[in-house]
Image 1 (cartoon, rainbow, N blue to C red):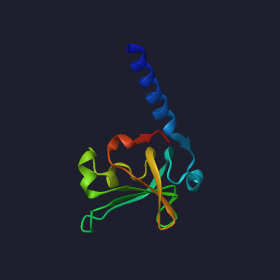
Image 2 (image 1 turned 120 degrees about the vertical axis):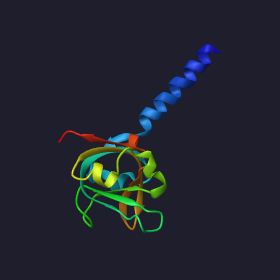
Image 3 (image 1 turned 135 degrees about the horizontal axis):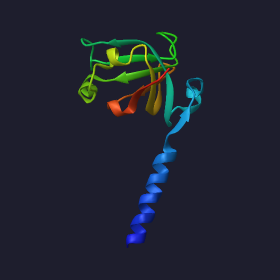
Length: 122
């Protein structure tokens, strides 16, 4: 029984580790629907507190509308972040992990928790 549990845990660990591959910002369009890790600079940010669902947008790889990736934090998830995302990450080089989706023809990633994003040295 102990051996079976070890095999199951190793299999899950291997799957989890391989589920997110590190890619370049320029490769995002080839990874729609995939869970990835990507790195880039947040050029602009905006919190729309009075809009429906109170989204926060972080534009990575360029300023709006030329961003390569839009990171979205919905209002219901803001409490999962220690600091306001639009302030904490603006101008920072970040590494993010999550699933790539298309929104209006552009790649985006939804952030649910602050452990999906980390500031990296530039």
